[in-house]
Image (tube, rainbow, N blue to C red; front, side, top):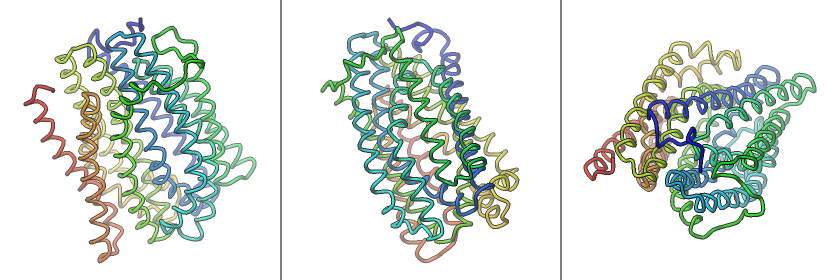
Amino acid sequence: MAKDSNLMTEGDYRKKILLFALPLFIGSLFQQLYNTVDSLIVGNLVSASALAAVSSTGSLIYLLIGFFMGFSSGAGIVVARNIGAQNARETEKAVHTSVAMGLFFSAVLTVLGVFWSPAILRWMGTPEDVLPLAELYLKIYFGGSFALVMYNTFVGILQASGDSRHPLYYLVASSILNVILDVVFIAVFHMGVDGAALATVISECFSMVLSLIRLLKTDDLIRLNLKKIGFNSDHLAMILRYGFPTALQACVIDLSNILIQSYINSFGSQAMAGLGAYSKIDGFAFLPVTAFSLSLSTFVSQNLGAGKKERMKQGIRFGLSCSIIMIEIIGILFFTFAPQIIRMFNADPEVIAFGAGKAKVCCLFYFLLGFSHVTSAVMRGVGKPMAPMIVMLVCWCAVRVVVFMTVGQVFHDIRLTYWIYPFTWGLSSAAYLLYMRKLRTEGIL
């Protein structure tokens, strides 16, 4: 039997959601902090071009990794359903199938990332003064992507069981290690973007090993036996059913972001550095959304598996309200102090102007971003993964591509990259609101 302390089907639902989300929030905070430290150290101790190189790779990294991580989310839903139903045999099959899938995808991602990313960077129109550094960073990063994929696979299994504390411990430890290695490689050994990439890879290997040890030693239903790792056809089909829409959604959205990054690249390295710095503070705003999305996805899956629909509905309302309130408060703070925050990354006035300019447009609309992501997670949890995929593909991909292929070709204005985000967040929020009402009418929510 799984430990009662980890199950989300009993006890005060608000307490369960908060206690699950809090470690996720803190863990994501540490992860965002060490990602930000990378940029702070590179931007201040190396150069603006180096900061632009690291920043410009973000959309490509999210494209490749996001696709494979979508399947991990599907695996988590399947594991959580079986845990909620207290089915030990099926949970074991789901866990070992998830790990086998992670091993396969990690090999594929390494090959794709190392060999294809340089060509994609050129297709994106990365400036010549940035291109060599960006290529070097990506080759090292994707060379160690095995650790990243397997860490997320292991952590997804732990979180599906309701355990968000141990992933927090591992993430904090790896974050501290990453910061130390950043300082050693860049400030002491005078390495550049290669030092930042190497620090990230080593810290990810460390966290992967810690999470693997936890799965090997736990007494819960999710205990991992290396000899049992393999594909179970039924569970693989379920994981693909839930994971593929999420993977495709992430992939296509990030393709649209690559198009936007290409547009940003045309304004030069200062724009790339400024908007790259903004993306770091934007990541902080997203933390409560990430925490409550993962928490609600697990909460909904476990309670649906246990047949507790009314409890599930109460949890959804509570989690959605908390997420929107928190992200909007953060947005107001970033709106107010944007220039000062961007200055921390690089003191170039142009870099500050570009980063603060986007913050002044986007930050007050963060509540729309929060609503879209949390409702998307809820829909996946109730077994409706196709709906968020379609909404995101239309609103966050097709609309953005059309705008930049039409308006963007006529008006070469950086503000287009600012306003496209709140505009498409509003579209997706409206679509999700309508679909949520439909699900209520059908008795699903």
